[in-house]
Image 1 (cartoon, rainbow, N blue to C red):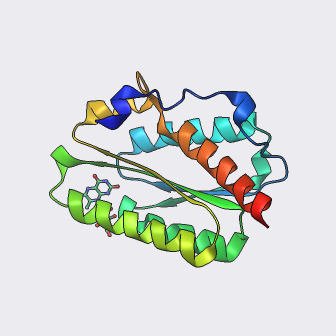
Image 2: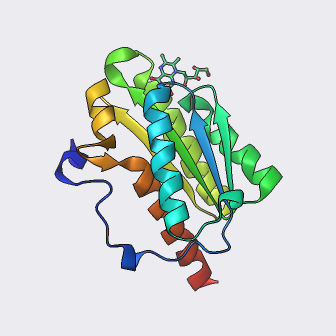
Length: 163
Ligand code: DLZ
């Protein structure tokens, strides 16, 4: 698995744009909640560390990862955030729906990025085992929630630079 070569939380803080003044939406899947809550902790602590105010982080829950794109769209239409981070976890060994869910979420999030021309970050863990998910949500490979938060900050900055 590609992320086994890289710690997801390994980045240089000096390279990260400030999140001061930004409003960030987070959509979180309730499936595999032990994992998704750990992703949430990683994302929120990283946003706060880089200057996003707690009251500017809007967290909403959806039943499963398949609902992440609609949850992200609803947050966008009601709160108009600068970026939305989508966090979920699908484990192959535990579901025959794996491919369908992953494909739906991937296409849904891709469409949102292009439709709204703002960052919708793909923070979905798609692993073979629960252990691999643990390793990537605060374990030996870091936390993909951190990576998702950094991606949101970088993409908002890119948009500002080009406007
Ligand atoms: C149904 C289902 C299954 C079997 N597995 C997962 C999973 O591993 N991770 C996840 O986030 N959601 C799962 N779901 C729920 C679907 O994402 C979705 O919520 C339901 O199919 C209802 O649309």
